[in-house]
Length: 78
Image (cartoon, rainbow, N blue to C red; front, top):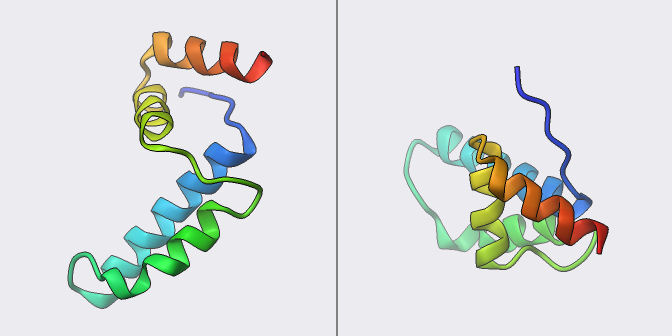
């Protein structure tokens, strides 16, 4: 088991992604741009949504890339 620490913004992004996946599964079809506003609202819950490079770093960290996790921890501490 891997334990990681995420910021509030990162948590919101993960929740938004899970909700989008849930919506996708419930609808039985892929990407529906009419629902993007719902995902953005979740991802912005505690502040500005992560940008594309921050999302990439979060994905790398969730996949166990220790360098990405260290970089995220350093950035959060600063």
